[in-house]
Length: 293
Length: 324
Image (cartoon, rainbow over all chains, first blue to last red; front, side, top):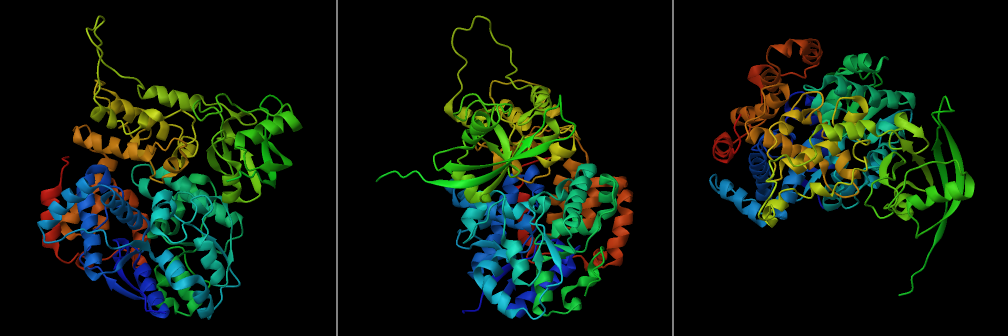
């Protein structure tokens, strides 16, 4: 197989509040022989909040990020569901609206760039499932996670809206019956836990303005996983990770029961199965202690 | 080409509850041969007509117009008269759970008390507010371009699919919900409308647009493809464009991104929270301390910065269209 190469859009948290996500992404890419060219010029995607204030500016900034991936001639790979949504949505809008694309390019021309629409955008989860292949990952597993019940938590912005799934991925998954993370858990030798909240909202985006709503949603998600005998949770989204890992005190208070589980990034789970060390995967950076390795 | 009708066996688990008789809900099981021609409403009819006459649900037009028959199939809000059984089986397999849009609001089986939905709808002035000449000389015309601005928000059939799929509605009784916001947008975008209060009503914390969790469930389930979250985003933007966005934690959070991006390209996460919360940031200290001890909060001199910041600064300066 030809070596896979992607332009890596790290997003903001991988360099700050989830350093373990960056570490584990690089560790897994190394194990799988995937080359990641980091887009060090990229800015924040707006995280769905800048878009509330100034949609045009968010389109320009996201188009600039994609333009850098295009300069490398590579598919952009994201490691955050919200980065994936905002970047893919920008691409969708510009590719389907010539006037808007022209207006955005007028701005990009001021800094010598152009958005062409030539690079695809995918999340690392789908890159390793669709492009690398689940079967190959399965063959490479050296430490099967067979003793663990693992609860997948998909995160909204990877699975909704469906149009972006359908446009972006070879095997688009259903917003109501997503399978990618479940399949990945099984490929890593673990038991996937089915529970109602696995494709629900974690509440991250209203953490500041509606903390009670956010805390209940977080609590319900962890409780759903616990009630179905999960040993730990896994998510492809660092924002979901932050909510589920660091906000358990508020979540427990909000739903009236103690809830806490280790919450691993998707890359950390794959890394464990592939034989990476806990240090390589940054497991010490979790608030909800990862004490099973 | 010859049209072939196929059949397949489907197991149904059907929510039952009569508020006048039952203390707790229960489920009835049915197994039926379902044809490729049927929609979910046909199954509801067959349960009532062939199995149990007491089974209750709402239905009226059978053409996706009245919005009466929305229920949940395997947790997904669905307009029963529009949704084909084949698609449901393809999506969820041969075991389907039929439930009302909101189990906690069930009055009898699939029939729910939608009073919260209607109260919230009424609260956003779902009509054009304007002084109408009692004896106009001609019609009050709206150009096709102006009508386009409604972005099809007027196609809403008030089925409640998005409202009862919304996780924020589920846990916050005050939250207006996506259908009410789509209605608010529909009249805000109407060139004839002169309401002074509607936009401010949806601007309130707790009940208003800032408490949307941005999960896209409403967009996913809408049987008329109205994209309620798109309308919520437009209301956010309208509040800023019309200078009506009050300074609160939500509006500062949106605006804070621009400051952070202009300064570092990537976010300064701590700085963003400080900008959004102001002195109230102290309430985050216990969590921040835990994160700090785990190496999740970098020191100021470790904060990342994008390369080619001059480009980002130029674009922020030249492309910003909003003011706060």
